[in-house]
Length: 234
Image (cartoon, rainbow, N blue to C red):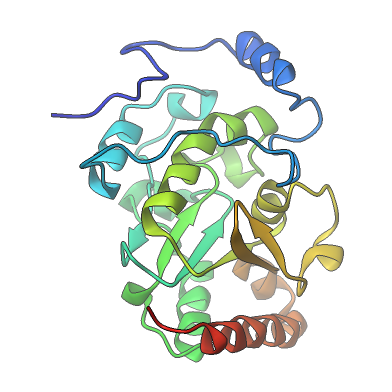
């Protein structure tokens, strides 16, 4: 049976103005996620027996924001449910919306090569997005859309428990760092999200348009690999 979040009544749809007012009450007037030192958990500890599959079932029926109106599929995420590295992008594109899988277009093929260069197969990491439904025209997700999906992403991170998060691109990096900065200022610098080390890097789609930046991303990924190598295995 599909588990319904205790924070959302079945069939409940929050109007945009009400969601914005609610976010304002939480102090999210300028950024959907404040800096980590001030950010309260969006959800409590995972319930007994809850897993990624049950969370995905709940997300499949989500109508908390406008992105649900035109989606074909909720693109929840995929990979090793106990992955050491979790990659988080901004949102699904057209191909992802059609297939229900994250990063399967040209940018996804480049991400696969990046993952392989780090010494992993795609199925050994976990790949997700800040929002689970495709923004129209592949635009960046809006603040209220990011905020509406925040609890799903936070729960994913809690259930997976990665050693390191790699944020792909500006929307994901801003969401997870809580900093309204350019990617040039964010990339290559360690941060953390709710206690998990976080490395922002350029999005693979950006690299397709700007191949010269691949060198910078590789330097950033080498920092991730060094940190993984220095983490004692449990």
